[in-house]
Image 1 (cartoon, rainbow, N blue to C red):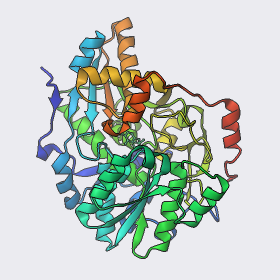
Image 2: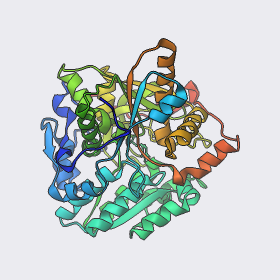
Image 3: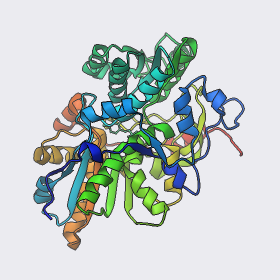
Length: 455
Ligand SMILES: *Cc1c(COP(=O)(O)O)cnc(C)c1O
C-alpha cells in the first residue's frame, strides 16, 4: 500500500477519550507530598491550588479511558487532527532505508502541543465558575497556549514569564497580551517569594522554578483563581495522550507498526502523550517498542538525575514529586539555548523509565541545531529547538539503519515551530553556540539540596 505524505484522520476517527496509562501500570507513580507534612497530598489539600476536576484526574490511577468533554472536542476539531507526516524528503536526503514519520503539533498559533492541555485546563476552570488562572511560562509556548484557551472560555490569565525569555522574546509576550493575558517578568517584586529570590540573587534572570513559586503564591492571594501547569503533572500527560491516540489510529489505518518512538523530554508531557498508548500495549504484554526520551546534555534529568522526591519549584511552595531530578536548585548554564530546562521530569515517565519501559539519551545543543537545520531544509518546517532534540536522535537512528541496512520504522514527535527562537538560531548560524555539560561536582552540589524523605 502506498503511504501518503500526510496521514489524516476523519472527524469520526478522532479520539473521544484520553488514555490514562497509570491504569495499566503495575508500579504506579508515587503520590505528590505535602511540602509541610511530607504526607501524600489529599484532594482537599490540592483543592486550594488546582481545579476540582483536574485534581480527580491527577489522582486517578485506575480509570483507563477518561471521556473528553464535548466543549473540548469542539475546540480540538479546529486544529486537530495534527498531521502524521512521512518524512520521505528527509529519508531521501539521508539515503536511509529507515521509514521516518513525525507527528507535527506546531500547526496552531501557540506553535506547540501545549494547547492540547491548555484548553482542557481552561475548560475545567470555567466549569468550576472560576474567574481566572495563574501560571508560569519559560520559553513562552505554554503561556501562549493558555492565553488562547482562556480567551476562548472568557477567563482571566496571569502569566509569570521567566525574565530572560521576557526580555529575549518580546513578541511571545505580545501574542499573550493580544489574547488578553497579563504577563509579569519573573522573579518580580509582586510576590513575597519573588522579592526573596531577588534579594538573595540580585540581577538573576529567573528560572522556571522561580516563576512557578510566584504563580502559585499569586493564585493563593486571589479570590476565584487557581494555578495551572503546562507539563510534569499526571493530568497534563493525560490530556496530551490525544497526540499518541491519533498517531496510533493513523498508523493502524495503514497497518504500520513502529519499531521506535522518539520524543524530546522537558517535563515529559509531549513524550508521555505520544507514547502512552504504545506503552499501554507493552504493559499489557501485547506489543514491544523501543521508546527513547531525548534531553539536553546541559539539563540531563533522566540520564544523570536521581529518582527521588524533590521540590517542583525553587520557592518550595508546591507539593513534592518523586521523579528523576537534578535538584530544584539546578539551573542550566547561561549558554543553554535549546529549551527543555526544567530540573525534574513527569512522575509517570520517571516510573516507566525506572521500570525499564523506556530509555533516554542526552544530546548537545550544537548537534541539535545541526539536525534542526538539516530538517528545516528538506521538510519545510522550521522546528522548535525542543523538538529538534527528537529530530537529532531520529536522524542518528536513521543513519544507523543506513549502516546496517535495517528498514526500521521510526516515529518521532515534532512538538512545535521555532519562529520565536531565532536568537538561538542566530547564535548557531553565527557559529557562536557552545555546548556545556555540567560536571559531576556541579550535579552533586545540586543533589545536596534534595529533601530528606523516608516513606
Ligand atoms: C514545552 C515544550 C516542550 C517540552 O515540554 P514537555 O512537557 O516535555 O513536552 C517540547 N517542545 C515544545 C515545542 C514545547 O513548547
